[in-house]
Image (cartoon, rainbow, N blue to C red; front, side):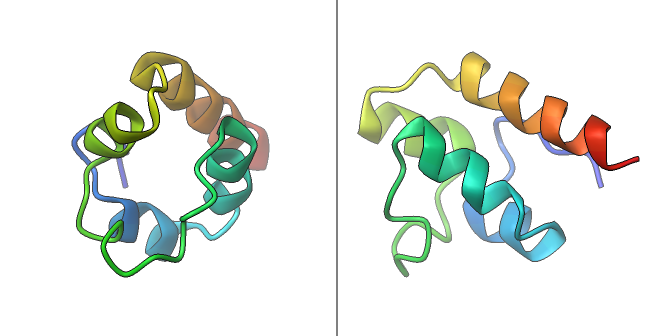
Length: 67
């Protein structure tokens, strides 16, 4: 699965629950919140005042390390 800034939080977590740790480290402590599941990564970052590119880079780094 290719994860982009348009990927929903729910899709990312369904793909790999390890992403939850990355999101929480970035400041998204509502990872399990039902309303966040349908938000894209970009939308969730905007709500939390985070740089979506930085969070995306951390997710990509994590996914690359799994291989």
